Image 1: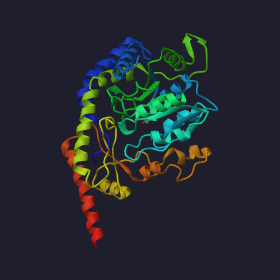
Image 2: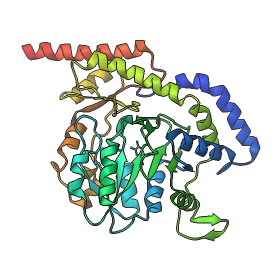
Image 3: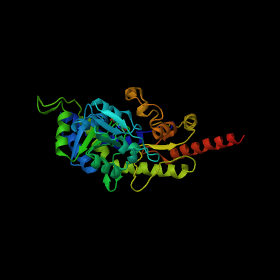
Length: 372
Ligand SMILES: *Cc1c(COP(=O)(O)O)cnc(C)c1O
């Protein structure tokens, strides 16, 4: 079976340095919020061009803490797209605010800046911009709208660490950037982890207080926070993997180029441009016979996946927002037609060729059966 992600290949290179780093932590006696975490915070902040980084428990908490730091809560509205991982909308609801959805662009699956204006009300406080699959949203247009309407920008960069936009790395462009280190992400720990980055010292101070029970002085609590911290073992693992991040991202891009070259005549492949860089956390194609192809691939021992089959506005958890089918047609169409193909830095060209030829075979069969 060719899996969606295979972490075994990279483990061969990473195993020795990671075991060393883990041993160091084990013997240090420092397990939560220590030296490794600090070093990682500085490295990631520096990498994305932000002044401050705060390690947290996971990407979902990163989003929640970003909203809290911006004082967003009940009676506030936050714009985002319904075509994202559930956590984006969930964090908005967790702080008591209302998720207000904006449909996506057909070509990149990211928030459509042209549809933002009509959703802004006096209660709108922020936009969570998701850089889906690793591709940048149209940040310049979005930042201009943010200035016009005095909105804060949170970047959900959980799938897009290292992606560049006009010479800057995403996550460091808006007011706050959020990253996830879930194992399958482009920079993945071997457990949960996340990071919040910002250029604003006040926001940073709030975030490090909130992640630690609303406390900046031991046993003195200025606000209700939470316990969401990055542990030293995960930070140590991430520091080792961080050294390989750019190489791994480059490999993803190489694999994606081969997919596009071979498949763009038969299915819709990711659309790229100079300002729409993509680091391919997922490589997604779009086609009418999505479910049939997924089945055919499975029959041929090839995994594929759907990110995401149900847009947020049609999730039971958000029924209270009173949306119905048809409200966000581009998101709904994407949910019906999209299919993610296996991609990971250590995917061999041989394996990839098997995926490609199986897809071609599927379409040959489909075409001949249509002729009869
Ligand atoms: C993974 C992900 C999250 C949540 O990150 P966790 O670390 O799993 O909590 C949020 N948003 C997007 C777009 C993601 O892909």
